[in-house]
Image (tube, rainbow, N blue to C red; front, side):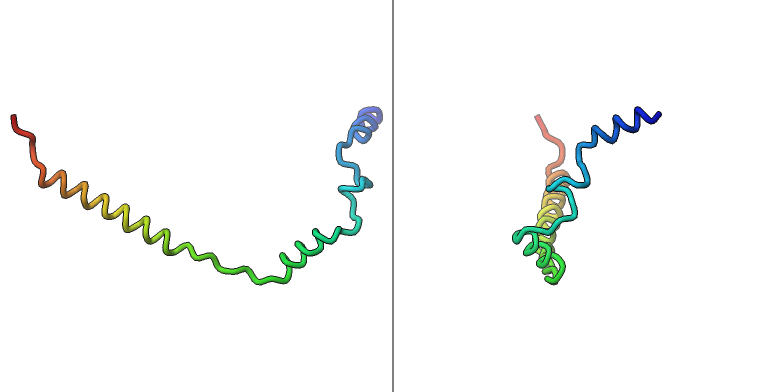
Length: 77
């Protein structure tokens, strides 16, 4: 069992002391992104108009289909 644990610890792909994955200081770009995420208020996204437009288009297609089926009637020869 000890040998297996030693093999698992030796095969760790992300060592805790690694330079890219450790708890070291952030670079300037990362600091700027972190500050922006923590301190900016999120802007509300305006998705109501596209959703409303698609809803109206779908309703119009449904109405046109129903009217065509009702008024069209059977095809005569």
